Amino acid sequence: MTDRYSIVDFREMKKEKKQIAMLTAYDFPTAQLVDEAGVEIILVGDSLGMVVLGYEDTLSVTLDDMIHHSKAVVRGSKRSFVVVDMPFLTYHINEEEALRNAGRIMQETGAQGVKVEGGVEIIKAVRAITSAGIPVMGHLGLTPQSAGQLGGFKVQGKDPRVARKMIDDALALESAGAFSLVLECVPWQLARVITEKVSIPVIGIGAGKYCDGQVLVYHDVMGLFTGKRPKFVKQYVDARSEMVKGVQEYMKELKEGMFPAEQHTFTMTEEVLEEVLKE
Figure (tube, rainbow, N blue to C red):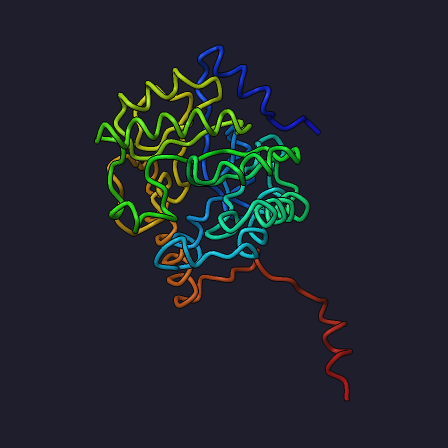
Protein backbone atom coordinates (compact mmCIF):
# COMPACT_ATOMS: atom_id res chain seq x y z
CA MET A 1 0.00 0.00 0.00
CA THR A 2 1.25 3.48 -0.81
CA ASP A 3 2.25 5.47 2.26
CA ARG A 4 -0.07 8.18 3.51
CA TYR A 5 0.90 11.82 3.36
CA SER A 6 2.84 12.88 6.43
CA ILE A 7 3.66 15.99 8.42
CA VAL A 8 7.03 16.04 6.68
CA ASP A 9 5.28 16.17 3.30
CA PHE A 10 3.23 19.18 4.39
CA ARG A 11 6.29 21.04 5.63
CA GLU A 12 7.96 20.45 2.28
CA MET A 13 4.85 21.61 0.43
CA LYS A 14 4.90 24.87 2.40
CA LYS A 15 8.58 25.39 1.62
CA GLU A 16 8.00 24.68 -2.06
CA LYS A 17 4.84 26.83 -2.10
CA LYS A 18 2.67 23.92 -3.22
CA GLN A 19 -0.96 24.27 -2.17
CA ILE A 20 -2.34 21.66 0.24
CA ALA A 21 -5.84 20.43 -0.57
CA MET A 22 -8.07 19.53 2.36
CA LEU A 23 -11.71 18.39 2.32
CA THR A 24 -14.08 16.94 4.88
CA ALA A 25 -15.41 13.39 4.76
CA TYR A 26 -17.65 11.62 7.23
CA ASP A 27 -18.11 8.10 5.83
CA PHE A 28 -16.45 5.27 3.91
CA PRO A 29 -17.59 6.01 0.32
CA THR A 30 -16.87 9.74 0.58
CA ALA A 31 -13.43 9.03 1.98
CA GLN A 32 -12.76 6.67 -0.93
CA LEU A 33 -13.81 9.32 -3.43
CA VAL A 34 -11.82 12.16 -1.86
CA ASP A 35 -8.76 9.96 -1.40
CA GLU A 36 -8.93 8.70 -4.98
CA ALA A 37 -9.12 12.31 -6.21
CA GLY A 38 -5.77 12.95 -4.54
CA VAL A 39 -6.72 15.24 -1.64
CA GLU A 40 -3.78 15.39 0.77
CA ILE A 41 -5.73 15.90 4.02
CA ILE A 42 -9.17 14.61 4.97
CA LEU A 43 -10.82 16.35 7.91
CA VAL A 44 -13.46 14.43 9.81
CA GLY A 45 -14.99 17.66 11.02
CA ASP A 46 -17.50 18.08 13.81
CA SER A 47 -19.47 19.80 11.06
CA LEU A 48 -20.85 16.28 10.58
CA GLY A 49 -23.30 17.26 13.29
CA MET A 50 -25.05 19.65 10.92
CA VAL A 51 -24.46 18.17 7.46
CA VAL A 52 -24.82 14.47 8.35
CA LEU A 53 -26.61 14.12 11.69
CA GLY A 54 -29.02 17.03 11.36
CA TYR A 55 -28.03 18.88 14.54
CA GLU A 56 -28.45 22.65 14.84
CA ASP A 57 -24.75 23.17 15.59
CA THR A 58 -21.51 21.37 16.35
CA LEU A 59 -21.93 21.46 20.13
CA SER A 60 -24.14 18.37 20.15
CA VAL A 61 -21.48 16.18 18.55
CA THR A 62 -19.95 13.66 20.97
CA LEU A 63 -16.58 11.98 21.09
CA ASP A 64 -18.27 8.69 20.25
CA ASP A 65 -19.87 10.31 17.19
CA MET A 66 -16.46 11.44 15.97
CA ILE A 67 -14.84 8.08 16.60
CA HIS A 68 -17.65 6.20 14.85
CA HIS A 69 -17.42 8.29 11.68
CA SER A 70 -13.65 8.55 11.70
CA LYS A 71 -13.23 4.78 11.73
CA ALA A 72 -15.16 4.62 8.46
CA VAL A 73 -13.14 7.45 6.91
CA VAL A 74 -9.82 5.84 7.80
CA ARG A 75 -11.01 2.52 6.32
CA GLY A 76 -12.03 4.31 3.14
CA SER A 77 -8.78 6.19 2.60
CA LYS A 78 -5.30 5.03 1.62
CA ARG A 79 -3.10 8.06 1.02
CA SER A 80 -4.87 11.01 2.62
CA PHE A 81 -3.72 12.19 6.06
CA VAL A 82 -6.85 11.92 8.24
CA VAL A 83 -7.40 14.58 10.91
CA VAL A 84 -10.26 14.29 13.41
CA ASP A 85 -11.95 17.21 15.15
CA MET A 86 -11.98 16.93 18.93
CA PRO A 87 -15.53 17.90 19.87
CA PHE A 88 -16.71 20.50 22.36
CA LEU A 89 -15.44 20.08 25.95
CA THR A 90 -13.18 17.12 25.17
CA TYR A 91 -9.98 19.14 25.55
CA HIS A 92 -10.98 22.18 27.64
CA ILE A 93 -11.31 20.84 31.20
CA ASN A 94 -7.71 19.78 31.86
CA GLU A 95 -4.64 18.44 30.08
CA GLU A 96 -5.11 14.88 31.33
CA GLU A 97 -8.60 14.58 29.92
CA ALA A 98 -7.53 16.22 26.67
CA LEU A 99 -4.73 13.69 26.26
CA ARG A 100 -7.01 10.80 27.17
CA ASN A 101 -9.62 11.83 24.59
CA ALA A 102 -7.03 12.47 21.88
CA GLY A 103 -5.55 9.07 22.65
CA ARG A 104 -8.94 7.42 22.24
CA ILE A 105 -9.35 9.00 18.83
CA MET A 106 -5.94 7.84 17.66
CA GLN A 107 -6.19 4.31 19.10
CA GLU A 108 -9.77 3.58 18.08
CA THR A 109 -9.83 5.17 14.61
CA GLY A 110 -6.32 4.84 13.21
CA ALA A 111 -6.37 8.53 12.24
CA GLN A 112 -3.16 10.48 11.78
CA GLY A 113 -3.97 13.54 13.89
CA VAL A 114 -6.53 15.60 15.80
CA LYS A 115 -7.75 19.19 15.45
CA VAL A 116 -8.59 21.62 18.25
CA GLU A 117 -10.04 25.14 18.29
CA GLY A 118 -8.50 28.00 20.23
CA GLY A 119 -5.25 29.74 21.06
CA VAL A 120 -3.31 30.42 24.24
CA GLU A 121 -6.23 29.32 26.41
CA ILE A 122 -5.78 25.69 25.27
CA ILE A 123 -1.98 25.68 24.91
CA LYS A 124 -1.47 23.37 27.90
CA ALA A 125 -3.78 20.81 26.32
CA VAL A 126 -2.03 21.12 22.95
CA ARG A 127 1.37 20.71 24.57
CA ALA A 128 0.21 17.64 26.48
CA ILE A 129 -1.17 16.01 23.35
CA THR A 130 1.83 16.77 21.14
CA SER A 131 4.23 15.67 23.89
CA ALA A 132 2.59 12.24 23.69
CA GLY A 133 3.44 12.11 19.98
CA ILE A 134 -0.03 12.90 18.67
CA PRO A 135 -0.07 15.37 15.75
CA VAL A 136 -2.27 18.40 16.46
CA MET A 137 -3.79 20.84 13.98
CA GLY A 138 -4.86 24.18 15.44
CA HIS A 139 -7.86 26.29 14.42
CA LEU A 140 -8.13 30.07 14.83
CA GLY A 141 -10.44 32.82 13.65
CA LEU A 142 -14.06 31.79 13.50
CA THR A 143 -14.12 28.76 15.77
CA PRO A 144 -17.61 27.20 15.51
CA GLN A 145 -17.49 25.59 18.96
CA SER A 146 -17.25 29.07 20.51
CA ALA A 147 -19.28 30.97 17.91
CA GLY A 148 -21.70 32.17 20.57
CA GLN A 149 -18.90 33.84 22.48
CA LEU A 150 -17.61 35.41 19.26
CA GLY A 151 -20.97 36.99 18.49
CA GLY A 152 -22.04 34.45 15.89
CA PHE A 153 -20.60 33.29 12.59
CA LYS A 154 -18.77 36.48 11.70
CA VAL A 155 -15.41 37.46 10.24
CA GLN A 156 -12.76 37.57 12.96
CA GLY A 157 -9.63 39.73 13.19
CA LYS A 158 -10.81 43.06 11.77
CA ASP A 159 -10.13 44.72 15.10
CA PRO A 160 -6.39 45.40 15.73
CA ARG A 161 -6.51 43.89 19.22
CA VAL A 162 -8.16 40.70 18.01
CA ALA A 163 -5.80 40.48 15.03
CA ARG A 164 -2.73 40.83 17.24
CA LYS A 165 -4.05 38.15 19.59
CA MET A 166 -4.60 35.84 16.63
CA ILE A 167 -0.99 36.29 15.57
CA ASP A 168 0.15 35.55 19.13
CA ASP A 169 -2.14 32.50 19.25
CA ALA A 170 -0.71 31.16 15.99
CA LEU A 171 2.85 31.52 17.26
CA ALA A 172 1.88 29.90 20.56
CA LEU A 173 0.30 26.92 18.80
CA GLU A 174 3.41 26.50 16.69
CA SER A 175 5.58 26.65 19.81
CA ALA A 176 3.37 24.05 21.52
CA GLY A 177 4.04 21.61 18.70
CA ALA A 178 1.06 22.00 16.38
CA PHE A 179 1.95 20.71 12.91
CA SER A 180 -0.55 22.89 11.07
CA LEU A 181 -3.17 25.58 11.52
CA VAL A 182 -6.60 26.34 10.10
CA LEU A 183 -7.62 29.99 9.74
CA GLU A 184 -11.36 30.48 9.29
CA CYS A 185 -13.15 33.66 8.25
CA VAL A 186 -10.34 36.18 8.69
CA PRO A 187 -9.26 39.05 6.42
CA TRP A 188 -6.85 37.83 3.75
CA GLN A 189 -4.26 40.39 4.82
CA LEU A 190 -4.14 38.99 8.35
CA ALA A 191 -4.07 35.42 7.02
CA ARG A 192 -1.11 36.34 4.85
CA VAL A 193 0.78 37.82 7.81
CA ILE A 194 0.17 34.72 9.93
CA THR A 195 1.11 32.37 7.08
CA GLU A 196 4.42 34.18 6.67
CA LYS A 197 5.14 34.37 10.42
CA VAL A 198 4.76 30.67 11.23
CA SER A 199 6.83 27.82 9.83
CA ILE A 200 3.93 25.36 9.93
CA PRO A 201 1.40 25.07 7.07
CA VAL A 202 -1.65 27.33 7.31
CA ILE A 203 -4.89 26.05 5.78
CA GLY A 204 -7.47 28.70 4.99
CA ILE A 205 -11.23 28.64 4.83
CA GLY A 206 -12.58 32.07 4.05
CA ALA A 207 -9.06 33.44 4.62
CA GLY A 208 -7.93 34.31 1.11
CA LYS A 209 -5.44 32.79 -1.29
CA TYR A 210 -2.19 33.48 0.53
CA CYS A 211 -2.49 30.51 2.88
CA ASP A 212 -0.57 27.28 2.29
CA GLY A 213 -3.74 25.40 1.41
CA GLN A 214 -7.53 25.45 1.55
CA VAL A 215 -10.26 23.41 3.19
CA LEU A 216 -13.96 23.19 2.38
CA VAL A 217 -16.85 21.00 3.49
CA TYR A 218 -17.42 18.19 0.98
CA HIS A 219 -21.19 18.66 1.03
CA ASP A 220 -20.78 22.35 0.12
CA VAL A 221 -18.40 21.60 -2.75
CA MET A 222 -20.74 18.95 -4.14
CA GLY A 223 -23.95 20.93 -3.63
CA LEU A 224 -25.41 18.36 -1.24
CA PHE A 225 -26.11 20.61 1.74
CA THR A 226 -29.23 22.76 1.44
CA GLY A 227 -28.48 25.13 4.31
CA LYS A 228 -27.18 28.69 4.06
CA ARG A 229 -23.99 28.84 2.00
CA PRO A 230 -21.18 31.00 3.45
CA LYS A 231 -19.54 33.60 1.19
CA PHE A 232 -16.26 31.67 1.07
CA VAL A 233 -17.86 28.50 -0.31
CA LYS A 234 -17.63 27.63 -3.99
CA GLN A 235 -19.93 24.88 -5.25
CA TYR A 236 -18.24 22.88 -7.99
CA VAL A 237 -20.96 20.31 -8.76
CA ASP A 238 -24.74 20.20 -8.37
CA ALA A 239 -24.68 16.58 -7.26
CA ARG A 240 -27.87 16.88 -5.24
CA SER A 241 -30.00 17.64 -8.28
CA GLU A 242 -28.54 14.66 -10.15
CA MET A 243 -29.18 12.39 -7.17
CA VAL A 244 -32.80 13.55 -6.90
CA LYS A 245 -33.21 12.84 -10.64
CA GLY A 246 -31.82 9.36 -10.12
CA VAL A 247 -34.32 8.60 -7.35
CA GLN A 248 -37.19 9.98 -9.44
CA GLU A 249 -36.17 7.88 -12.45
CA TYR A 250 -36.06 4.77 -10.26
CA MET A 251 -39.57 5.50 -8.95
CA LYS A 252 -40.88 6.17 -12.47
CA GLU A 253 -39.57 2.88 -13.86
CA LEU A 254 -40.81 0.96 -10.83
CA LYS A 255 -44.34 2.32 -11.03
CA GLU A 256 -44.50 1.85 -14.81
CA GLY A 257 -43.39 -1.77 -14.60
CA MET A 258 -40.05 -1.14 -16.31
CA PHE A 259 -37.94 -2.15 -13.32
CA PRO A 260 -36.83 -4.75 -12.52
CA ALA A 261 -36.28 -5.92 -16.09
CA GLU A 262 -35.18 -9.40 -17.13
CA GLN A 263 -31.48 -8.56 -16.82
CA HIS A 264 -32.01 -7.64 -13.16
CA THR A 265 -33.65 -10.94 -12.14
CA PHE A 266 -32.63 -14.54 -11.46
CA THR A 267 -34.33 -17.65 -12.81
CA MET A 268 -34.68 -21.42 -12.36
CA THR A 269 -35.50 -24.19 -14.81
CA GLU A 270 -39.06 -25.36 -15.36
CA GLU A 271 -38.03 -28.80 -14.09
CA VAL A 272 -36.89 -27.38 -10.77
CA LEU A 273 -40.03 -25.29 -10.50
CA GLU A 274 -42.21 -28.34 -11.12
CA GLU A 275 -40.31 -30.21 -8.41
CA VAL A 276 -40.89 -27.36 -6.00
CA LEU A 277 -44.62 -27.31 -6.75
CA LYS A 278 -45.13 -31.03 -6.20
CA GLU A 279 -47.31 -31.79 -3.23
